[in-house]
View 1 (cartoon, rainbow, N blue to C red):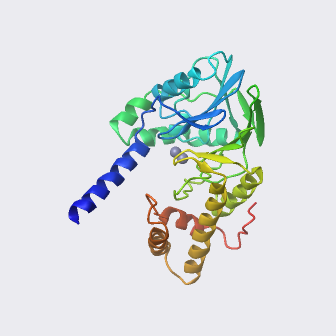
View 2: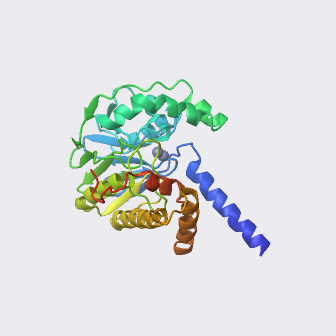
View 3: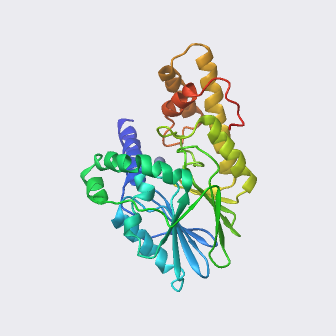
Length: 305
Ligand SMILES: [Zn+2]
Ligand SMILES: [Zn+2]
């Protein structure tokens, strides 16, 4: 029994090490007709049209950004233009930009750019302190201004493939960006829609209510495929699953709050309940999200702002 436990523990540790292992690999998987993904920390999407290519997210630091750009260049080798966008401003998603070739068109939404200017360097410093490898990867990173900044939507025609870059409001961060690719009907969802993964609101990002409001807009896109940034790809049902997970945690947390239970205790109880409901999930620690629910102003409606 002990050896089975040890084996399971090792398997879990190996899986989580792979998920947070910062080096970008060079063997992408196919997600849909025009989209490939390099699975890792984070998953990086490559969207390929007949004239141009779009990469979503960079990997941690310029060395990883260069790997992502090199892998992207293998698809559509005659494409003249390379676009780069980022799901949010955190360093593993955006800090590899300097590794992309000159002439790459960097585009992101205005709210995300504001967060980057306010907290980007602070996050790079925080990630650098986590390990010597992170420090090396992020050394000397200078975050440049985007070539294009948009408010709510930018459409990129890649040649037979259209990428809609969308800002629907705050969720994991204030500036979470979603990319919806047609005709594939694939959603590149960042942290907003994940697969068997706990939601997490970072710092002064969104609120549980604003996250649910974002998901209602995402559902209206009716995606057929979803590629999250920190979990496995899935079909469009992941959007409804994310909404129910967030609603369930929120309803449960508000009930416990109403009974006078502390946020810490509610986090423990809800995490344990989720573990029972979803024993196969790698992690059901809802403590952080429960704190976000406790911090919501009373009377916040489900429809959000
Ligand atoms: Zn991330
Ligand atoms: Zn993040």
